[in-house]
Image 1 (tube, rainbow, N blue to C red):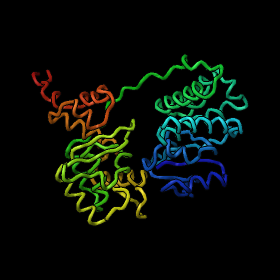
Image 2 (cartoon, rainbow, N blue to C red):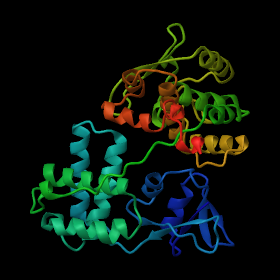
Image 3 (cartoon, one colour):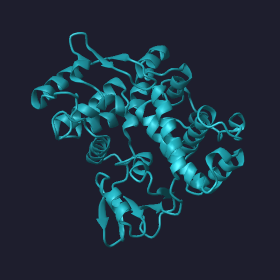
Length: 357
């Protein structure tokens, strides 16, 4: 579980009540929600303009509860700051940045302006970004990925919107982390996909693995995107505003037919409880969590693990890396090449000297 700790504040209570699955835990004197039911960025977005989150990695007395402190110490954004954020938002919309990027960048910029206060943004210098990194990002245990996003947002604003004394070309990024993708065995994938009793849940998880989809790509599908006659799935305007197609296995086509007959989706292929509304990201994460628990798998599986497993299993079955790049929608082949480091196809042929002892 994740515990949200803050002093009594009616506005913050209203904000946390809008977080799906959040509930008051009287014995711990905090609000809590299931671990993995929402990402850190999504959770922080609920408190945008009210407070910022500080993720505490050390677990306190209760090992089943990760602590998140809701920090209320930053001053409010000034009217000038809000106007600058509005200008930045309009510029990004004009440039057709994705809604997700616009929301993330504007949220980060608002936190940076509040950190700068009382200094105005046109007085900001590179040293202020260094202080922001050390005293807010690192002190709050935010990830290197969040730090990179913060640098992207701040550089973009000061280069395109605010002409100031900040030298954006001299802003340096953190050293890149090189992590291997998490991959499940085919048997583990089979157990997870067979675990849900609900037909819709089974269809969603199966389609992610069968076509190597991102979470947003699955939730943005329409019924017309499934071309059963040609045996393909059309993925429209995914990451990088690119369209692509993926082959649909016969087993998935049959599963989707059964699902369509049972649920009759109207607008989205997978709809929420109300017809015509898109299935939520939090609910989909909860579906996976329940399936993993029912399958008896004790790994911290996320939806993206299914995509990683799809790519790795394709590589191990002999599929050319160029085709895998196209199927995943990767812009660069270097992104796809990471799966060569987790494929066991060639590693299993290596004989350890231990065998000769």
